[in-house]
Image (cartoon, rainbow, N blue to C red):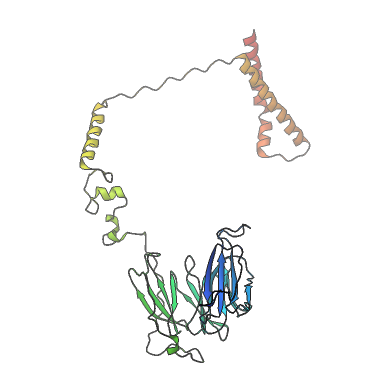
Length: 384
């Protein structure tokens, strides 16, 4: 770190290990610097998003250190307080933790653990917003820095931008395209949590407050209530979809008349009325292709015999005579069953409780004896 115009000797220096990308966060007075270092790969395997660390440097070179964070995971956001030499950090795996640190990188206050990834001080540093945007729900917690107490929680569902007004009394959240193509618009809250303005816009790409110096709006000793003359609006409840989704072009006609597929749309000539008895036309097919396909179908139908008699059922095939080898195999299988039946009968006589299927197997012994006798007689006749 060098003073402008004196590049012969640095005023402060710091060596960072495991750093592939860095982000600098200067205090507005230029006396302190926060350095956020990141790597794409975590060699320990604990994080998919790589490793991140935060370092504090005094511009005069009198102090530097690594900010010790008591929770593993990525560092989501860092913000300096504009009034004091302190900063806020949101860090750790979700649900993330938010905390305040002083100018010696020592923790001052725990702002809680919740699904949050963004932190913003208002221009006077009196109110702090901790929010969860992106793939999170859009909730915002507003904190009174002086009393270290939560003022309220705001539901800014779907918002992708958050900014304080220059007077530090109003917070704006906006849903922007192209990240979201629906529900674009602006919502403004007083720091008491009251929604004072809501304006939907079809496609909103960017919005910001008109710049003004914060010194034009003096900080009051106590947080003021909602000023008179502004209509406090209650947030509208989310509309529940009624029935199945219908595309915009089909919402002006009855549901029964809406095409249900691309083939149905082609059959109805995209958006026209259905033609009774018309064949389904593949999407993209020309009239010539449809005519050729219809001609091939008529040709195949002409080639089929009209009065074809059904074929008589096949006569049952006589069973093959049993050979000596097959008779011996069957006798061996039946004798194995008899051995199993004898074992079950012995368990029954010993007083063991048998299942229903085991008792039925014992009762089938006479049938097996009869089948063995019949096979033995047939084997004797075959071997004679």
